[in-house]
Length: 367
Image 1: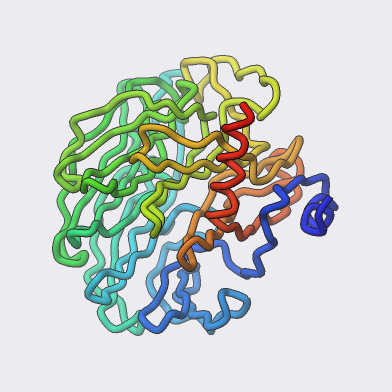
Image 2: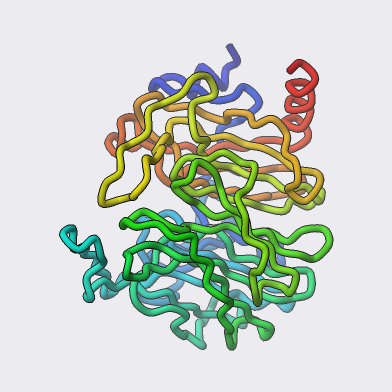
């Protein structure tokens, strides 16, 4: 067993021997600034690190309503013209309430999506505007395309029947104005059912690929050939997944990288939860293993997935995937617990794209 495995297994956790511990005192989101430093935003504001996240500056205020307890409630992009744009959930008037008799969200449910931007490197923030009212939740995709368009993918709670749908917003002026796409509705009924917590990446041919969390044993996928304005190809993907989100990133090598929770353990199966107020279909909530895969053909096929980390009886989910340098990938579990939702135990890892690609190739040849 490697020293890294010994280090990470001290609390009943197994970590792949190709991973290294990541000395970062933040869970993101991260963005690289023009001078190579890192920036992040937490509930206190924007911070800068010149030592790869080991230490951070004092916070410079950004806006009210941010919540550090939800790991994927805000996303940050530095545009090609050096504008910082942030999309975030505003917890100022947060309230979630569900009518179990009717199986519907109550009228007072509220958590809005807002956006704000900075044109001076984060010293001041302006142009704050609301993208979605009502109730919304975590999201895993905010990118700028090669053509310069900002694209964020979001989920939104609807009624009759109560379920989630997803959509995108696009901006062609560095976040000054936004336009919404069509809604993607996969049906379902329950406060955790439907199409939820999307992630997005640009493909080599300019199309966009969205992967969508579902309770249907796999991610569903949607494609846009007009930069996220509309989504007209919507279908199940080949990627098995539990009812948990993934994070999809296009790497500088051109490959797609995905970190997520699979439907079942690497070896064996787990029984699904019975239908409930959360979901009208039996659902896998398996989150004890965090897996990683790569694609070299725009997501048509994927390498055999490798488990990055395992926390038996606990949870490793809501991942953040960040490419710090070409081929140097940071993986952080937004939710990391030793037992269910109890006893937090952070997971922050660094891995090398080339090393994992070789390991995946060897695994494929052995199968």
